[in-house]
Length: 84
Image 1 (tube, helix red, strand yellow):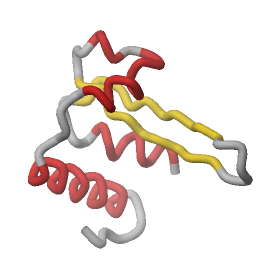
Image 2 (image 1 turned 180 degrees about the vertical axis):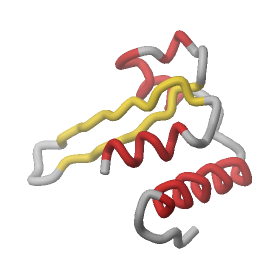
Image 3 (image 1 turned 180 degrees about the horizontal axis):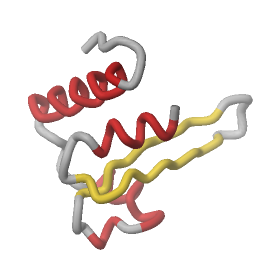
């Protein structure tokens, strides 16, 4: 699933690499975050992508919705169905 989601996020375009981070908060579960690093944005290499995600201005709602729908379609194309 991680590989499929990585490929689907890259399909958005303008993504240099997808960073996958996992944080545990001491409980019996954990959180997984996927960050699409903008192509050529060298300041976001490595572990700093999570910090930059909180600093950069948010993606406009219409663009965010288009990106989510594209990722959903790409995942469905690989097997499954899109509900976006």
